[in-house]
Amino acid sequence: MSNVNHYTYRVVWSADDDEYVGQVVEFPSLSWLAATPVEAFEGIHRVVAGVIDDMAANGEIVPSPFSERQYSGEFKVRIPPELHRALVIQAAEEQVSLNRLVSARLAS
Image 1: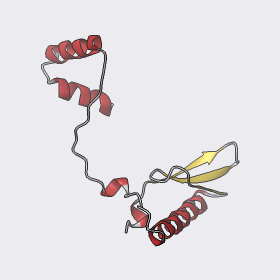
Image 2 (image 1 turned 45 degrees about the vertical axis):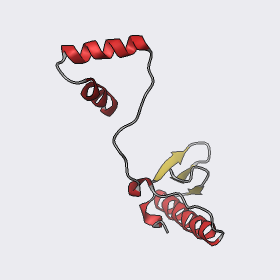
Image 3 (image 1 turned 90 degrees about the vertical axis):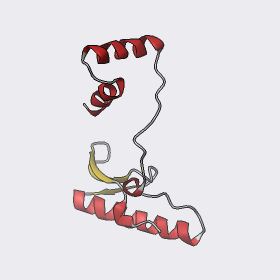
């Protein structure tokens, strides 16, 4: 079973609700409103723990935390041929590989 502490949590201010909202990326439908950031985090943490317990008890597949997933470092992106050509030219001008150029752009 996944460790409830390993999920990707965030707390943001909601002007609409006039409270803080606790969220967890792996469970986008879940949230918790509270007056303070700490209370919002603690609330969403409890909700996730309960949901994980319920899913496990019902034999459902519990999403694994992003922090525990393995990533290859590769993904494919379709782009227009004109953009592909322009990027290849820019990479050649900068004397780097196309991969290095695109990686740097994604990181910035």
